[in-house]
Amino acid sequence: MSDYKHEKVIRLPFPKSIIEKYNAEDPYECEEYFKEKIGGLWDNRSKNSFKLGYSDEAFYIDWLYYSTYGEESGDWGNVRLLTKKELEVIKPYFDKLGVVYKDEDLRLVDYCYYNCCEPSDYYELSGDDSNLFIN
Image 1: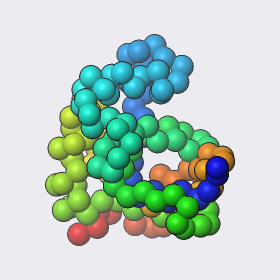
Image 2: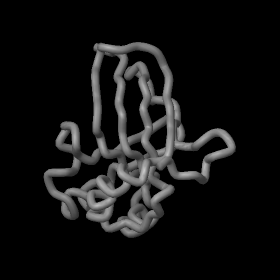
Image 3: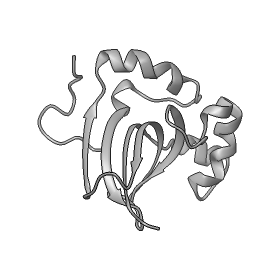
Image 4: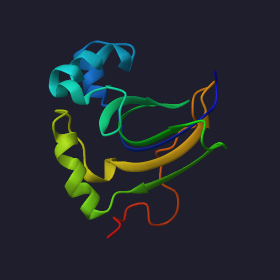
């Protein structure tokens, strides 16, 4: 049954290098790479693990850090850069993925959507301070 899903994730765009390495058409074809790299931290359907994130426009690697189903409602989302402290905590996990990224590529994305369709794309920053880290 469909209902609203609320998730808070640390999001990284899905690396094109992985798609090229596997000569894949779809990021789902590359999941074996991540299972080999990080084992039980990939898609174990629990908080504090990685999963393949998606939107109506793109695919992502998401670190799931909060999730509810049917407890909240509305289609909404917020995006921000990580604080220096958050980066210190999460970077060691993302480094295990074996992909190249910059600190500013990681975003905290908090969103809610009705799960009978794909969620709106939440990754891009808005406003004049899109290049600033939060202290």
